[in-house]
Image (cartoon, rainbow, N blue to C red; front, side):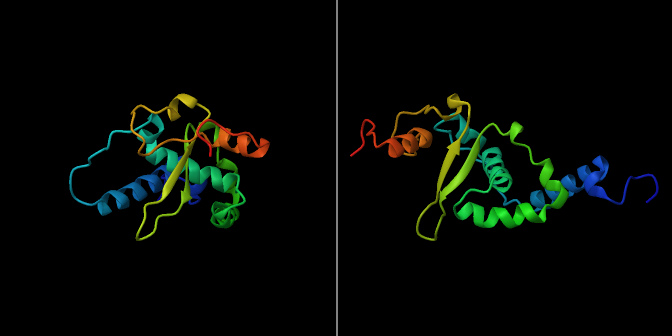
Length: 151
C-alpha cells in the first residue's frame, strides 16, 4: 500500500504501532466474559501485576539468570535478532519472577523485585502472601548470619 510506510514494519513506528494494535485486538477478542474483579493488593507492586510480570520476563531475556528462567530466556533473546538491543531495563519499575511454577494441585509463587522499596512494603497486616526481602535473605545466607525469626 503506497504511502503507509516501510515493508519492514519492525523498524517503522507506524507499522510497529499497527502490529501492537493488532495483537491487543486479538487478546481483547479472547478475553473471558464477566466483570473484572481486581483484588486489593497487599503491597503496591502487587497492584502492578501485569507490568511486573512483563518486566520480569523482559529482564530475564536481557539478562538470563542461571535457573529455569534462563533456560527459556536465552533462546528467546537470540531469536530477537536486532530487536534484542531495544530491551531497556531503565523503564522497569518492578519485576515479578516465578519462583515456583504452578501445577494442577498448587498455586505458583511470584517474587517481586524493585529498586523502589516502597513498592514492596506491605499494606495489610495478615500473614497470607507475606513478602520476603530476597536481597537481605541472600546476604544473610552468604554471610551465615541469622535474621530475626530464622530457625
